Image 1 (tube, one colour):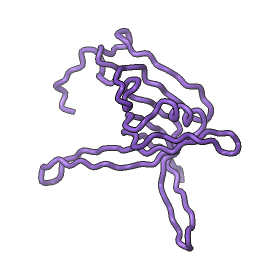
Image 2 (cartoon, rainbow, N blue to C red):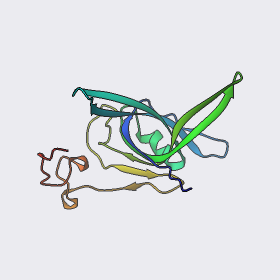
Image 3 (spheres, rainbow, N blue to C red):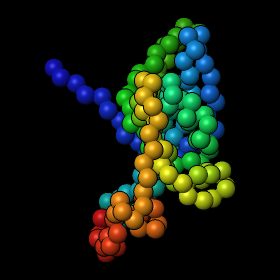
Image 4 (cartoon, helix red, strand yellow):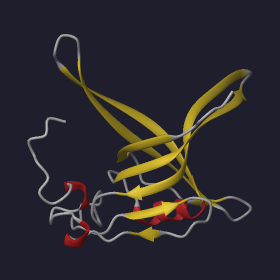
Length: 160
């Protein structure tokens, strides 16, 4: 039977990353991501639900996170689910986490640090891939509000 393991998360970082290196010299960092969901109940009330997800980043992606990501930073993570199991005091434990394979910093430089300002989104791909940057300007079809604002002339009356 075929299988597919892909996760895409967009949320805010819950704590500053702590970059460390394993004995082979590979960088690794664990971050927490708060992902919000807003939905309507059967009675018509809106409820907000926050899911906290642990994400592990490796290699250059971990180094970029250690340098640029802070608590509160908006972040997009693409990766895969991994089940960790261990035994402690004779009791079996398990935890589901995400192994991040690609990370994109959202918002401007200093966002999440209280510095304000806008910068370019940065993309870091795992497995030793170089960091890439994309420039967003008028010629790319985005207005002055930045890349998250949508194409120039986008209709604000769209109901979704």
